[in-house]
Length: 147
Image (cartoon, rainbow, N blue to C red; front, side, top):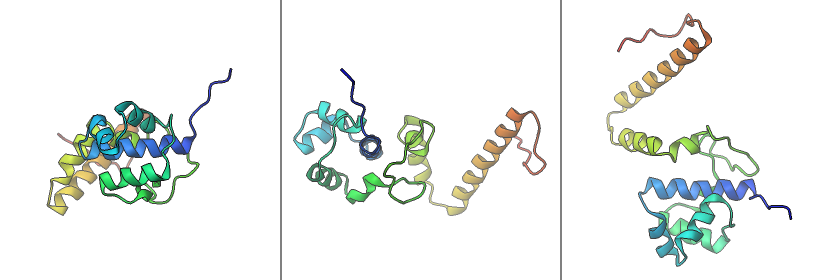
């Protein structure tokens, strides 16, 4: 007997449900209660094991106060992600991790746009410095960081 693998689109939609649930700080149990299903069913939705029907997706959208299209969009490109396979190192995976959620929540609390831009510039510089260090040489245009 051949084991069935979930459709990549179902996995992506499920990952977006999980992302939104974690962003609003809701447990699987709480979402399940709001939808009238078991938390195990929510787990299956989030893994893409079970497909989410159109009416259920609309109910999930209502709970999270987002349009149904939210669950089909890749935040990097803001275009539908149908058929796009996502690797474990992508933005969705990071944002739905504990560190990603903590970082995003803290970042959103910073009201000063200049400070936010400085943080982005710092992260960019650190990533470039890390990449050049791994390559064994320092790039000419990479800023020197002193902490």
